[in-house]
Amino acid sequence: MNKKELLNILSQVTPGTELREGIYNILDAGLGALIVVGVGEDILKIIDGGFKIDCEYTPERIYELAKMDGAIIIDETVNMIYYANVHLQPSVEYTTSESGTRHRTAQRVAKQTNNLVIAISERKKSVSLYKGEMRYRLRDTSDVMAEASQALKTLERYRYVLDKSLGNLTILELDDLVTMYEVTSVLQRFEMVKRIMKELDNYVIELGTEGRLINLQLEELIQGVQEEKYYFLKDYCNSDDLEIGNIIGELEKLSDSELLELERLSFILGYGKTYSALDNRVSPKGYRVLDKISKLTKKDIEKLISIYGDLSTIQVTPMDELVEIKGISKFKVKAIQSGLMRLKLTVELEK
Image (cartoon, rainbow, N blue to C red):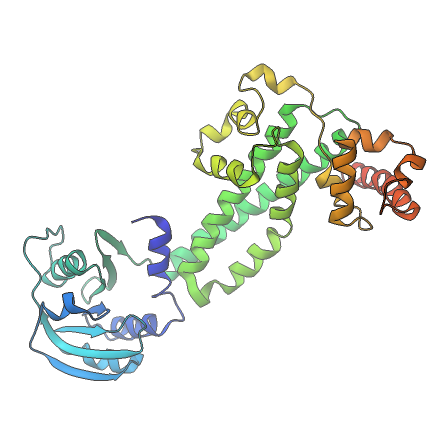
């Protein structure tokens, strides 16, 4: 089971959900329980005894039913409770690494039926999730919150470093002095920020309603990052055959140690893979910088780049020539010239 599937399962039992509320009630009362989520032929074949309930699910009802020893069967949408106090008889062909009777049964049922099975231990005060071959022990919300807060501080530091690197890159772009070393260094920082963002997304899912403040801070910190990265990749993609989505996919495949190898990033962008290639000068097409000039539309930017090819050529092109381009007015040309000068001054002042 991959991480995405695990997160989908966790989203069913995050704080704030009806199911998690029921689990809290059972734990608080010092009870244990075995809950199967979903009813199908595979489940019906292995249940014995108990009571057919067919009532609406509420956290209070599942807590009351947990006072009996048997398993509780609810539907996948957690709207109905179908059976209570049933005895589950999974096949012994399915192996289990658990020791307690309840947890051994839970793991076997999950493997046999591929249903989500929740085992709550009254002695250990713990909650274990099983589905197929997956086994996951729910962590205490305070522990997850502490890890999320630490990841948030890390993201804040990396975002600061990324912004500084982008500011330095902007000055070099306007002076036409960019080398592959600066490009790959910025790309490396973009990818590091993205990985911390994904980690925080996982924490937010696991925290449920408890993670609202973390999510608000995360959204504020990552504002504009995705769009800036997209234009950055368009600027430095070295081949028309390379698509931005494919580049992003190749970056995601890199391990953390491979991400530190700048020459590998150079190769992904379509340049040389040797370390000496990092000294080569490159000219950005200009998507990222021109997007910062508010008077220009995306259509204007595409038109300028399709005609002149890169930012340095656009900068040295006489004003009279730019005005002759259909759709680019004299007002927009002045906005380009003054905007680029103001952008450079602003970045230098921030440094």
